[in-house]
Amino acid sequence: MTDAMFAAPGQFYRGNLHTHSTRSDGVLEPVEVCRRYAAEGYDFMALTDHLIGLYNYPITDTTPYRVPGFTTILGAELHSGAMQNGELWHILAVGLPADFDPPVVPDFHPTDGQESGPALAARAREAGAYVAIAHPEWSGLSLADARSLEHADAVEVYNHGCAVGADRPHGFYILDRLLEDGRAMTLCATDDAHFTEPDHFGGWVMVKAVENDPDALVAALKAGHSYSSTGPDFRGIHWEEDQVIIESSAVTSVIVQGKGAAATAVHGDSMTRTHVPLQRFSQCDWLRVTVVDRAGRRAWSNPIRR
Ligand SMILES: [Zn+2]
Ligand SMILES: [Zn+2]
Image (cartoon, rainbow, N blue to C red):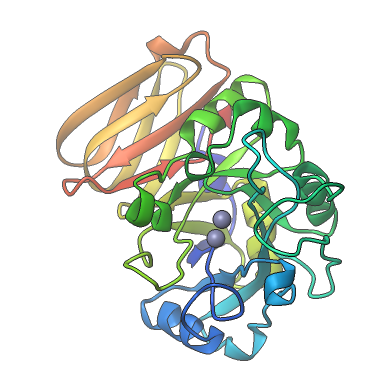
């Protein structure tokens, strides 16, 4: 069975879902952020400034910076209420309407009586946004926090800014536990670029969509028709009863992960079509795939259910 993403019509578009500008705490004007992503060969990006009072609740209008071959999706990084550790929630919302009603959040400190993070995420999703749990490792997000956020499409499993600035880039621990709970979740890699340090062009999504259009891209993300990468590409994923066949750019490892400790890795040189046996996964109702290239860069498939 060919993976649903590869069976879907359309083509792959490369994009960054998490970025900041001078409308919040980034150092480049929105026009220059968009110019740089277009210049670097991206097909789309979402400018997701911090939606708090300190910055006058920006949902930055990037529509003037769309050019042929490059589009933008409106979005924001949402904040409201405290996580278990007492710090403010960070929630990524891509595909947010420009008139989305912001919560009352003066600054980066939670205050009593604020809308909760989970309630805010639910509103954003109701408004049509693709919602991701942002940088769980950097936030110190607990599993209880993640379970309370019932209205999320994805977990940000790699955040390049958090890699460069904190060496806390990942979200796989949280994602895999939510999958074990039976949640239908996907994953994303992002930059979270502020351009304050080398925090850009390091993590992206490849979205299979019928056109490079904001609505089509958000719909494809919500359908799980994407993979995430820091370098390599998936070219095909074929699920069979006892093995999965992974077609990719040249990689040195292909790793399948499932419930609990279940994992199987195949290593080699310049592999582009790799058979991974699935015997280890008889008790697993979800699986996902990682490929690793010679430079240690990775790409991650979305989880599949079976
Ligand atoms: Zn954040
Ligand atoms: Zn951010």
